[in-house]
Image (cartoon, rainbow, N blue to C red; front, side, top):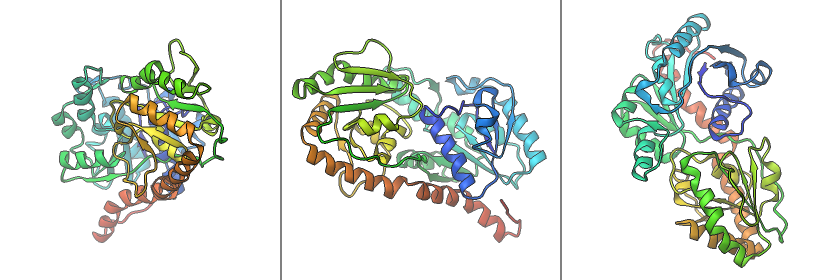
Length: 370
């Protein structure tokens, strides 16, 4: 059983990709998956292609602000009602603010919280930078939200380490998002197209600043370069050789056409879905430290790391100017993604996260089934 207050379809945003990856991974592992969601999560036809049953409720979703002000009771009542009727073995709450929906479930149910990011760390980071964090959460508040979870899923390694200090008696597992795509053919050697992807929030403002300033340095070095910006971050007036694509249902053609993918994120939290996506597509990626925080360490560089927007510009025009170097980076990117982010690996880690308590129950003679 999975409970979420997020819209899931179309899968244009990172959090939707994360949740859909969990649903698909569970079904691939042989679980029967039922979803508790709001009316606008997706149509019945769309959702029933992803899960086995849908249970809808009418309630207000968390729309930002202080987590203490969010009323999760309608979700808790729905979860308790469906659990009593359907008797699932596992309930997964998407995001920590829905963790209280599981506080009163019977001991036979394994309670899992999928933490897309660390809320108190996001709050502190964005406020320190003078930016709107969208969510307001203290360390003590987040600790309280997660107190009854049997298992916590972190979206990347850094978050996993932080959450282990937050709830040391809880099983915390780092499970990266499952992104189902494969590396397309390499961009033509003469390609000069660059792609950036991001949603509209303060953490992605670096994309717009790169387009407004750093991109000029790229154009000075590579006059025929073109920058495509996809996602809801793409708003405003495009600059020279910049195209705002808006939200795109299928990014595969954009990735295939791109010679370089740039992730000029200056501040953020959680896993950066678009960084993993670029690697899964086998692209030459230029990224700031914030964009690749918490990713596995690479034996050989699988992307070019740039400290700031100027560094992103320098690395981008260097790759555009050196197709052989770019091709080698593409090979390393695809190999790294296959090693760390292939669906079979992600599903194995998800299965291990859910199996630990199930195995313990078997040892105690309590039984477990899917």
